[in-house]
Length: 305
Ligand SMILES: Cc1cc2nc3c(=O)[nH]c(=O)nc-3n(C[C@H](O)[C@H](O)[C@H](O)COP(=O)(O)OP(=O)(O)OC[C@H]3O[C@@H](n4cnc5c(N)ncnc54)[C@H](O)[C@@H]3O)c2cc1C
Image 1: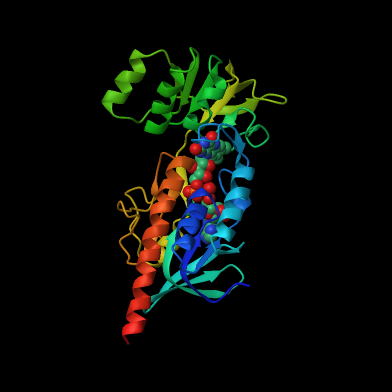
Image 2: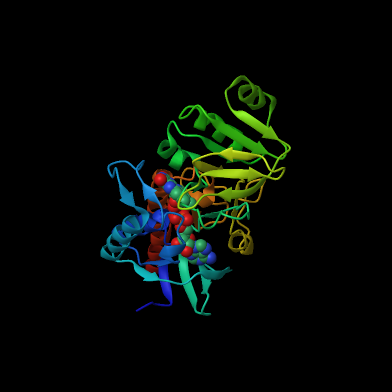
């Protein structure tokens, strides 16, 4: 049964949100987790770089995290927040079904969505050679030909990382926009650069077999890494004046995971790269403990009155 008031409300049912809930719940404050598990970035991934669990599916990881969250005493509501506002010493979160829930502290762990290329083959072959994360998937393509596309530093440094796994890395970029030092590193290395070109389509039956560029050039490849940066769900943060980074993509936090707004914390991918579970759960742990500490201050205040 979902209540209309909690001490800590967590927006996001991914690794950051669940870890925050486990720690806040065990610190004995009332906790609500909102969000949809199947919308977590990790839901369909296979993970092999998360400490102590060498092979696990994202779905199984989230299922176990959900059970731990419920055991820690938290409630779960599978709805998104559509608005946040301040109401005296409370923060009010409005859900997608129109319910208002008050809370002393809110932790934003809403993740980021990857920008897509929007070319034929991309959606069909996602997870079958189409990847949005070099750090996560480079190892699967060790020694095999790969393509990476994007114009900024994430694409160029991603290409250099891939070159340490395999001899054949193609970088396809309309225009390379990076600083001199990174450009020099790229020029000095083995990456085959196709500047001024775009990906026209991704080819393959069951798995990626190659890409076709906009001028018709075919590149044989077992994977394509799409590194176009990410867009975050910024509107929520904007409602209550939470400060974002210069690109307006990530929430700025300190080492306590506090934002500039008292009582509002953030953790996980929404706080910036590396977009990895290990970072998300670490930040979630800190945010959960800090938000619980913050919320408990109001108990003392109420006792004193
Ligand atoms: C294909 C793929 C493979 C990956 N593989 C790996 C890997 O092997 N290893 C690794 O470490 N990392 C991997 N990652 C990265 C990893 O998934 C993320 O770093 C991690 O999921 C971040 O956790 P998070 O909790 O910050 O966000 P997410 O897991 O993305 O969760 C965000 C949550 O916020 C919720 N939400 C969104 N908007 C709202 C709202 N308005 N109100 C309430 N809730 C909201 C969503 O429903 C979701 O539940 C991979 C990512 C992708 C896309």
